[in-house]
Image (cartoon, rainbow, N blue to C red):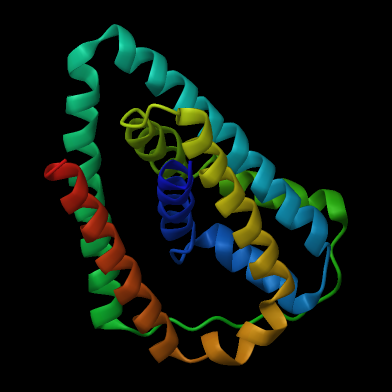
Length: 199
């Protein structure tokens, strides 16, 4: 079971950890200690819905259309190569730093609506969860275990990010930390792509 659970967990984690508007928002909320629980829960539930849709949809389609899994495997590998290149370029360029915004406390509803827009209106979210995780899950006999690993990675990451923000703040205020993170993400994406191409 672990040989199916762990790939789902680490794939999801490597995709979610990338720098983006959603993670920056969660981190800022954590730094401000503002609606942290609800922000993390909203992110986790949103990802769970998208991952479940990807795993269920791609699994069924892969069974009915034999060539679909192969097409998506190579398509996913190409996407991962591009995704890794983007992070590698970001690591090379550097210049990222994250600071909490100052200002008055915002209402919970306003905060959650902003977060939902950042999540559901971002096309990369669909590529990462529905398309990529869904297509890779089709290679496993027990897609439910793979999907569970991916969902738990998302939930654990967002809560760790939100509540661990105070600890991470000094680290990620330095651009060099983002460069290291981007470099690690790039290597992870390329390793997964290589695994897909030579599977």
